[in-house]
Image 1: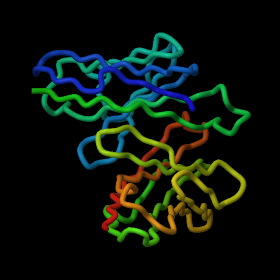
Image 2: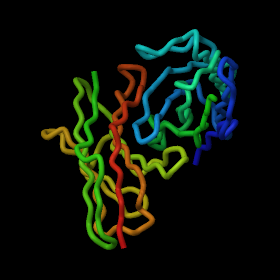
Image 3: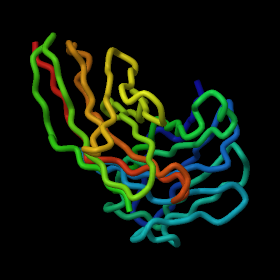
Amino acid sequence: GAVVSQHPSWVICKSGTSVKIECRSLDFQATTMFWYRQFPKQSLMLMATSNEGSKATYEQGVEKDKFLINHASLTLSTLTVTSAHPEDSSFYICSARDWGTAASGAYNEQFFGPGTRLTVL
Amino acid sequence: AQSVTQLDSQVPVFEEAPVELRCNYSSSVSVYLFWYVQYPNQGLQLLLKYLSGSTLVKGINGFEAEFNKSQTSFHLRKPSVHISDTAEYFCAVSDGGTGGFKTIFGAGTRLFVKA
């Protein structure tokens, strides 16, 4: 099956610093990737939709200047948390949509990365 | 706008007993429905999905779900659970393209299987 990786798997940083998280589709091309955040014991909340070669679309309430998303290639999207603060500590999960398997029925399936645990001190 | 409601935040059950995790959705357009499982500190694994066709969907690990359009439900079932099924389960709905293929997740149901 399609594989999505995230790097790093966990990161600890000081308040005020910026952190970049990478999301890669390893064996397929992903024109669309999604970024979610998940607080402990809560559900996944969609932050933004990342489209290759264009600006990301952010969900209401998500600060686009704080959470910078870049989708420069068909296999890589990055999320940069700028000037991180303790309230940004969370589990960040990306997903990628595989458009290349429409005939097989996986047309609308997203493949999720393993997540990145961010802790801001 | 779409929404997903998982009616039970926690479901304790004894090993080898049957279980049903409930999910209701609302949407004004045709939707695709999914169940995912999440183990601690891990990403999501797809259990099963409904795109079209037969309303009874079989997935991995012995799980199945039934799409009921009139009741706008997509409940997940397993006839006999194992200790290893203890995890968080998320029901999700996708708009199929009319809203950019966004997927909305329910709040999750914690399945706790007891020996």
